[in-house]
Image (cartoon, rainbow, N blue to C red; front, top):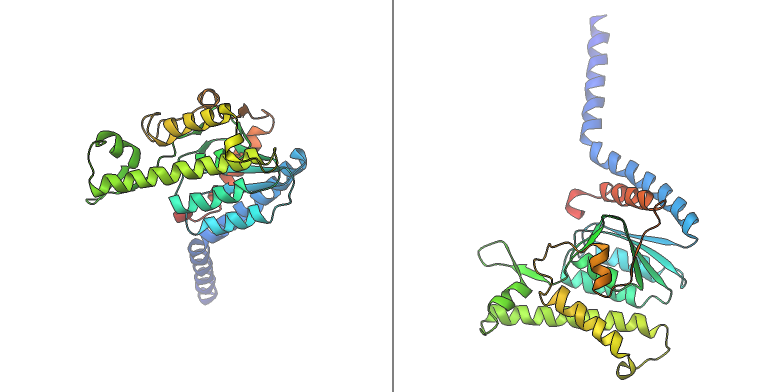
Length: 267
């Protein structure tokens, strides 16, 4: 009798150890299933496909996200953006894919689209934001020699008269970010007027881009993590509107579940 009890306890201990060891992958799989079911339900309500861009914007996520965008039908498309930001090169790839999509693009930001995430929002035609959702400046950053992070806009502003190599690199990064923003927004506008040459763009459109560049890239908005709420986005000339209050909680939950389905290093 004792032998069977000991064997039973050993089996239970082994099962508990297996469950503990595989708890992460199992939980992430459960979150993926729940997120997939919720996404399909939201798509039925929206009447159009919904692409989820959730997590860190980096070399791993960029090709996956670009593939989702490129393979989406050439019709109106909703894009859920839920990210703290990420790498400049990955941001450039994903925002370019968004800008080149032939259908009307509606970005949904239920909670936050910080930093490079805001660049993705600006590559869409309009954004629907939750009541407490935030965007943020998109000025790039780089690693400091002694560790930590240097924000390029802050470095250029504080050392504008210097020509140190570090400052020159920061200026180049800001120039690249500005060019990408102007190209992507121009591409979206050109969708509505076929083959619109840059010189025929309206003064209002150019002024809007100038304002975004000054505020979000060149440091005008201030601290990189200073939030941009929906009223601020509208004042900056972004086509930002309030999300449907009945849809917002479900989009927020979809963002949460999708984030939880990722490994911690991908969030």
